[in-house]
Length: 290
Image 1 (tube, rainbow, N blue to C red):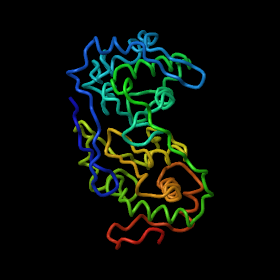
Image 2 (image 1 turned 180 degrees about the vertical axis):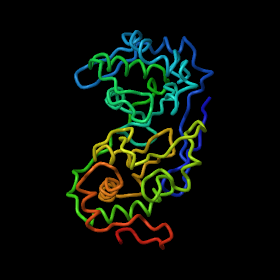
Image 3 (image 1 turned 90 degrees about the horizontal axis):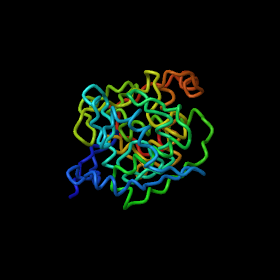
């Protein structure tokens, strides 16, 4: 049995994305036991699911549950809700939307944690422990037994920040309608913000660029670029890979830096320009024009 969930799109006209979801009714102890030999491969470290049972029980089960379904005893008190590993759908990936993450992606998430959530950075783990936990997470979902991870997207070299690029990024922000969820000043107060739901129909908040917290999937310029081009599966944040060019994605990165609270070259340039927020009532402009 396969369940499809319609995924609302963030920052652009609505497009339907369909993801295969494993039926929880099909997941039995025998299914999990059949995948206990799951491995992960991260650099020169091989992880083994069976070796992560103790660490998972000690550190993870309270939120993610014995069955990896996100229904641990902490579930009622945690917001956002813990990830359901059985679905095989993950926000933070280097791979195209709808595809499985790489083992490195999952390891990075464990080590980095997810800011503005109850998922901390697990920097107490050795590389071997993280690799074993990645294999354990994979063993919960049948997707990892039948599908390969997607091919990581290529991130081109970061160009020099210029005033023209920042202004072009503001145009991209307006054109693909990021403001509808994130607001014209990046404060997560756009007209659609209060209506957002995750793929399981639960309320979810847009990212507030101004409050000082880091994006969930990393805070470097490359991380921001990757988020645009892969999307955050399981959330309303889509991939823009088919809607904006690589240069435009870099422009958008630079413009978003002007909205953040941290000092940056981009903020300094925007201040010199007297750059104003996007005007949502202005007529749409062709791509490439300010």
